[in-house]
Length: 128
Image 1: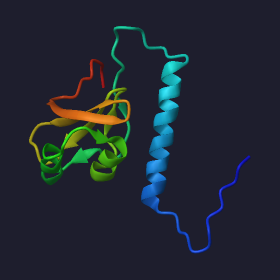
Image 2: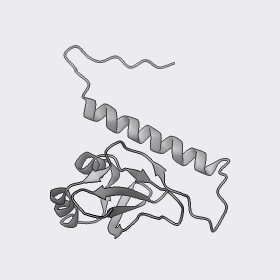
Image 3: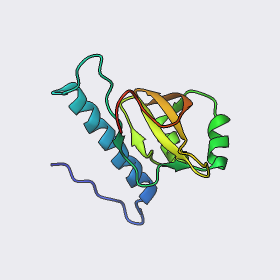
């Protein structure tokens, strides 16, 4: 088994560890969906809870609206944090400060964010 040794004076950053964990989780999730998936063709995958925060402020929403698309997954998580819900093709963030639940949805193709939209409530074709 390969062991990783940090050079003297090298301190791991929590942000990098969180990103590495997210990448590992995505890799494992994609492997399980390929081999032995219980989903049937034509039935969308239901949303699954993902992050403990998963919300976006009005300021973050302004940043999202100003992005040039496409964007990389790591950049999206680094800017907006982990989503509240996730499906196979989208991340769902609750918008803070609205009277009724409103959600912004970031759409993905593989690890590339291709755009965003809004849903109220989030449905990705399945039940929460």
